[in-house]
Amino acid sequence: MGQTIGGIQLAEYAYPNAIIKGAGTTGPGFCWLTGMHQFFTSQELAARYPDPHAYLAESIRLTEQNVARGFILPFDAAQTIREAYRVFQELLRSKGHTPMPADRHRPRVAQHECA
Image 1 (tube, helix red, strand yellow):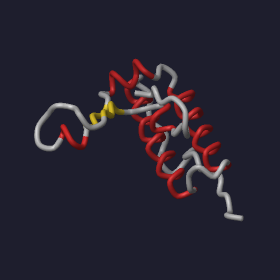
Image 2 (cartoon, rainbow, N blue to C red):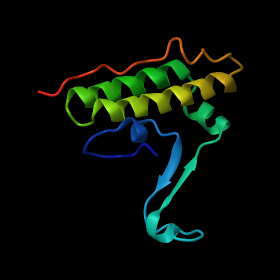
Image 3 (cartoon, rainbow, N blue to C red):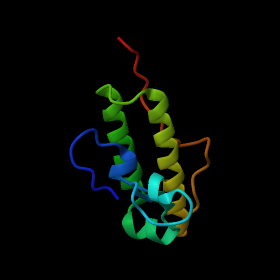
Image 4 (cartoon, rainbow, N blue to C red):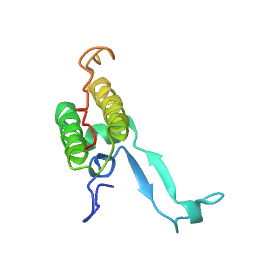
């Protein structure tokens, strides 16, 4: 849950919206082999990220930084930012705010061309 040390810092791990555990966990089926992924509830997200705007801004900043450094592709960055925007909308709703329309104010990842 955001405790990655070293390597490439991906927004999905720096600002998680779920608990992700690797192999060796217990549970039904192949959990012991494949691990598990469990989304945080709206209340857990609100407790973890009290400022929705800061959450979104930091997720975008880190994602764009990773694109600029060549660590991730713009396509993957766009997916990350879409998910961060979805969480942002959920955070706004949990605080009693009306989420912004999806077609307005949607953050866009900077486009970078390959050299």
